[in-house]
Structures are given as structure tokens and as C-alpha cells.
Length: 160
Ligand SMILES: CC(C)(COP(=O)(O)OP(=O)(O)OC[C@H]1O[C@@H](n2cnc3c(N)ncnc32)[C@H](O)[C@@H]1OP(=O)(O)O)[C@@H](O)C(=O)NCCC(=O)NCCS
Image 1 (cartoon, rainbow, N blue to C red):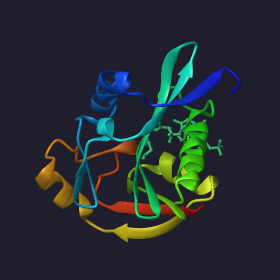
Image 2 (tube, helix red, strand yellow):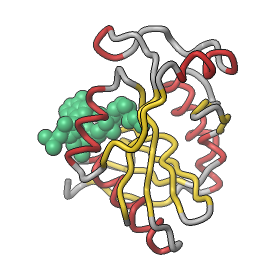
Image 3 (tube, rainbow, N blue to C red):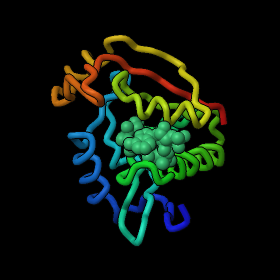
């Protein structure tokens, strides 16, 4: 973890961040709880290793809650995801947020393990939510991680 540095996303990172979002999420837009977001337009943090981007998190602050919109560790299992989540937590606290939350999908068992091991609790289940998401973003695949059909949204949260 010592050689990984975390810094806020800057304006000049925009095109690179957008490319990373498209490469890893299939499109520049993301549909979550029926709303459309463009993560590259949001604030975020980059993880850098030997001057190369190895991770990206984007988030959105509304009222007194912060929502993680995307989290990617391009080299898994090195602590990059944990460092990025810590950076968002600190920023959200500094901005007066009481809660950090995010949505993942039912297929993403890795993410469910990752967040729960870091103190997040299950906060909501939206069965069948992906049907609405696909009306807005038809490119969302039908089958996801581990061959599991992608159907439902699961919300996780942690108090700050
Ligand atoms: C989930 C994710 C961000 C975790 O980042 P990471 O840098 O691998 O996480 P860390 O190294 O800090 O921690 C590893 C932990 O994550 C979990 N994990 C998730 N995916 C893993 C993977 N492919 N390899 C190893 N560990 C993984 C393990 O439970 C592990 O837990 P432990 O350290 O408590 O035993 C990363 O796997 C990822 O980018 N996944 C694809 C995108 C995604 O699903 N994002 C989250 C949805 S919003």
C-alpha cells in the first residue's frame, strides 16, 4: 500500500477519467435508482502507482449524504479500493455528511463482501430495479459477475 498515492480528480483528468468509466462500466452514463449520472462529471479521487492510474472513485454529495457512484481498483487485492473509500469518507465528513451510501447489484458478490467487511450495512433492496435501468440504458448486461443474472439493486450505507 505504501507506493499508492491518492489525490482528487482534477479538471485536466477529465478525458482520462471518462475513458476509464467507459472501459469499465460500458458507457459514460450510469443509471442508479432510476437516475442518470455521468461519473466523469462528478468529484472523485484517483489512486496512482508509479505515476499510473490504478484506481478511481467518484461520488456525489447531496444534502447531508454522500453517494459513491463508481469505485474501481484496476489492480485488485492491493488495498486500492480501501484507500479510495477512506478518501471519500474523509471528504464527506469534512463536507458535513452524516452518511455514506452506494448502490451495487445482486451479482456483485465481491463488492458486497468488500463493503460489509469495511463497516457498511445493507440499507435497502430494490428487487427488479434493473428492468427500469435497462429502459434508460439498454447496454446494461443481463448477466454479471459469477454468471449471476443482474436484476436487483442493493443499497449499502455507513454512518460517518
Ligand atoms: C470491489 C473493489 C473496488 C475492491 O477493491 P480492492 O482494491 O481489490 O480492495 P482491497 O484490496 O482494498 O480489499 C480487498 C477486499 O476486497 C474484496 N475483493 C473484492 N474483489 C476482489 C478481488 N477481485 N480480488 C481480491 N479481493 C477482492 C475482498 O473481500 C477483500 O477483502 P479483505 O481484504 O477484507 O479480505 C474491486 O474489486 C473492484 O474494482 N471491483 C470491480 C468494480 C466494482 O465492483 N466496484 C464496486 C461496485 S460500486
